[in-house]
Amino acid sequence: MPPLPSITDSGAADAASQASLASLVSIIGAMTPGPGDFPTAIDGLGLFRRDEPSPPVTCILAPSIVLVVQGAKEMVIGGDVYPYDSTRFLITSLDLPANSAVTLASADVPCLGLVFRLDLRTLTELIAEGNAPAPKERAVRKSAGIASLTSGLLDPVDRLVELLQEPEAIPVLWPLLQREIHYRLLKCDQAPLLRHIASVDSQGHRIARAIDWLKLNYTAALRVEDLAARVQMSAPNFHLHFRNLTSMSPLQYQKWLRLNEARRLMLNEHLDAASAAFKVGYESPSQFSREYGRLFGAPPKKDIARLRSRALVMS
Image 1 (cartoon, one colour):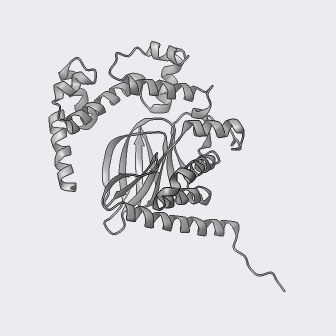
Image 2 (tube, one colour):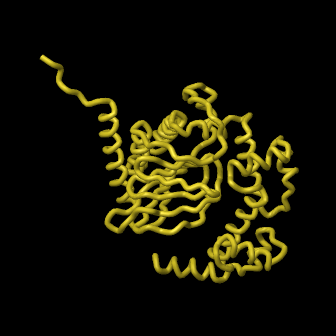
Image 3 (cartoon, rainbow, N blue to C red):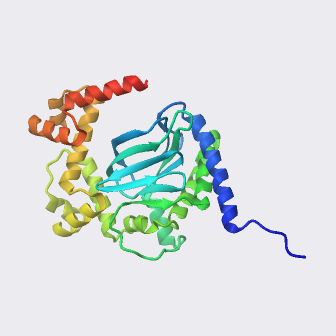
């Protein structure tokens, strides 16, 4: 008598993935009452919902993974386009200026997903302990990539989101799930990208330290040679690796930080353009207006009016 047919490993994995996705769609849908971004009680975890496709919106990506459990999005970083949906996810290892667009969403079937911030210390500990087998090495020249979404990663992510429904258990179970998710990421097809940043003797780790300094000191005058020396790199080598990993020069990155902070000051704190320009380190309001218009597509006053009008429509 022949053996009874059994579910193959891939079939079981597919079934597990579909179950996890269905669970995530249900919970995220219930916790996002309308279009927008929603923080949660778990540090480093945010949820989002979009009810229609949208053109690219300027943002800055912290080191994180972005999972879409329904619908589709794409991220544009430098000249590279990263599309992702419920079969593949975005992973970034540095703070990156980017443009985010929603490519598939509707009121009936909204684009739903989550952002999970990576913890460099956890990655470093797992690598040092040897608990995450090293993948086949390859050259790393980017700090963002698209990875396949497997049941091995979806399962702990699903359990993490389910934890939002049990707030009293978060302090106990959150650290365990955080570590498990980082372990799974170090086994995914974009693991070299994470190892490049987490390894303390790597060029990527030095660039991450330089970016941390820029984020705290973006209003100060910048000499690239001084910043390179701060992270123990030669100026040419520093400039090359910084551009490879961020698609910008250090000066362009500083300018991006300044302009986005000025935009926030005008929008949220109602500063005028000249005051915002001086506050973020510009000495010339006219130069500020020119560079602002190149980045955001309109002069400061017109751009802020457009953003406020859009916010009223969505409210």
